[in-house]
Length: 302
Image (cartoon, rainbow, N blue to C red; front, side, top):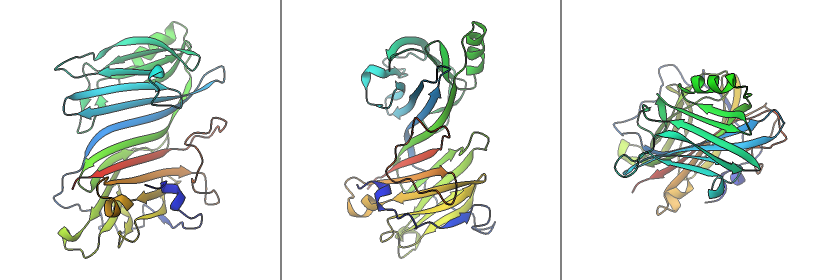
């Protein structure tokens, strides 16, 4: 599959407002399809220490028929085993839902603490409450996640450990199943979490040609007709006062069915005069302002 951004033109932008792009009664109405299964979620965080050193921390949650797992990677190479912590929560063979581990990566001393023993899950691999994950970098709290993490961080801070700045810059989600994908996203630190529904309708629903629909908070914001010809493209919407580019690439659904993967991306940007994200990196370490990206990799079963 070609890079999704390489097929998008700088001027191929259509701006719409999620609050007025569709009438209130024209909400997304999915058929009896069951939403696809979320197999894994990878969250990329940018941490800035008091020494001005910056690190990338990737937290990955995964789920398969044999169990669930958690991994933490430090640095810009998530495949590097030397900078990874992997926890298997499979209760049948090996279960380690609580603990801590110390290792070195990117010339820093890393301490990871986690407690998933009382974690609650919905349909995906990422816990919703009853857990914590804390990453300490060079004696600074570089990242903390979960509703139980504040108590752990408070204890650390009482011992004089400073709290570093961190922000979520990218979230990658993998789905398998049919052509209905449901997730949530928070596009800025001060914004609310929005429900996102991506749906591809086809001949089985009485349509002559496939149609791609994207809904945010049950309001239809994007509708792409004749999807087999418009298999790559982009539009821009407003969410929480931010410009959000939505890009799609469903080429392989039609022309490489053996793979069956499609890619959908939401990315915030600073203004109308800024360029779309073409070949730049997800995170520029020199850039103070952190933008957010949500990537959805969707596998359509035959």
